[in-house]
Length: 187
Image (cartoon, rainbow, N blue to C red; front, side, top):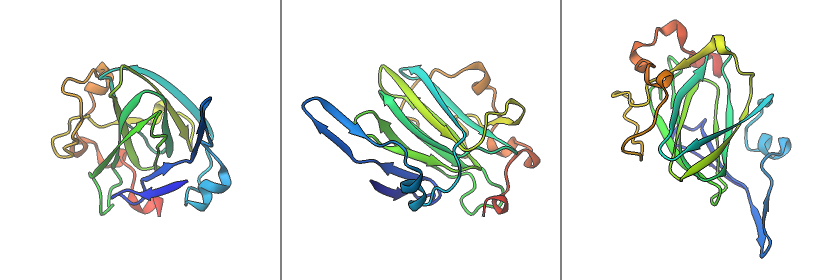
């Protein structure tokens, strides 16, 4: 398995080895021991799958104070996946990284607790898998508008399809500081 730290070093890209032949392929998507050796030591407690159509953009979502780390991957299709550091006091606060995840490149991205997450669908449809380090907590849901002018994410879809809820999220600078995670809580 290839492990690559992104420019936001806590966000890690995994490329599991795929073993294929004329019948198809096989790959290991999770092994506690292997991922711990790569630095992911948080326990995963919940798995989720979403299905979306072309140009759908989901995000930018986060939870606080019950922050979730996520190991994400694509089961079918292709997405542009994004993580944004929203930890108050972080030297990379407000910065983002993006990666294309697809069923053919087998890449996974680990988004640590304290980061917002979103993705847009590049293929006709996509099944997206989330492995989470904390349970979903509706009372702790938060979000940042996907087109925040200060964050400047270069989404590769010209006219994204965004839910009403996600369209109503504020810019990062407008989120009350007490509603955001603090860098020192994740050291």
